[in-house]
Image 1 (cartoon, rainbow, N blue to C red):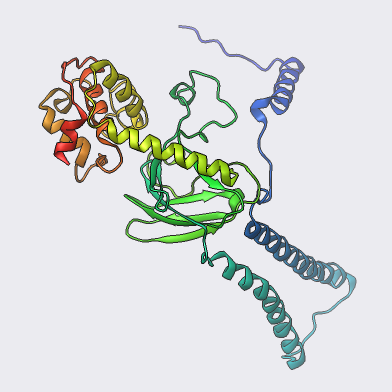
Image 2: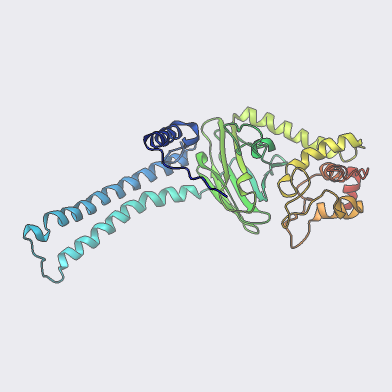
Length: 379
């Protein structure tokens, strides 16, 4: 048996290596976002936080220059090779007072504007609108108590992009099916909590970041000055799909907000009416596939699951067994596992549709149909 060894071929190999590195550096594959500061604020309180940050940063820079300048000057100009000898002295009350008083005055000078801004950040009184935000694995629920609106916001990036089967667009993993809509110029109070584990609702341009903790309420507020779309993400490691939990906020005029609220309420009324409707199998399968895709990361789009983590639905005892048992686990979850309870997350029609889909997709073909009225009867 013979073996061949590729030997170094001199300048040709070296030039090829240099050319390859150069191409890598100028290619899009090597590009990155090198922003070193906060994003542009679109709220007044965000502007104050930004300017406070810059003020404190400049104070730290000046202190650093003075301290390190004095240190390096002493090292260079008073070194032994220049004939300097180490001084021998004990305490100096004057010097100790000076180097205690100066930092104290600097800290007081920074504390005054910091405290004023902090007080404003937590003053959510006299809000024009209140929105309750609840974190779920891995989605957000938004509730507008005064408008009687409630909906879930899920990642809407196509699975083909996530699985590298299609080109990724500029808002990859930052797209949702139902964005949070806010009126411009209105003080909005956010009441933030969690349903399962700790999440964190963070929108950089709004300068709002609050932990969503189960059993606790955190609040924040914002008054958006500029219409537009602002994106954020969950900023607390919350499980397997933490990176698939984006936030999209749309700031619109007050008139547009009222129109959106009317449309959203009409959708909720129509959704409630779907409970009384008798659905065909094709309608249930189409709607069920849409609902299933919002949580397909666990059992996978193919229904094969993740071995050792999430069981397969294809050929499973749940998806091919008694319908009542299937409905029960979808609605109430399974304690001690990652299987969530969807009774509070999905309406009757969506639960009926997704159960019908799971029982007739992935080769299961049970022929079973679940109607929304059956789900309503089990609530």
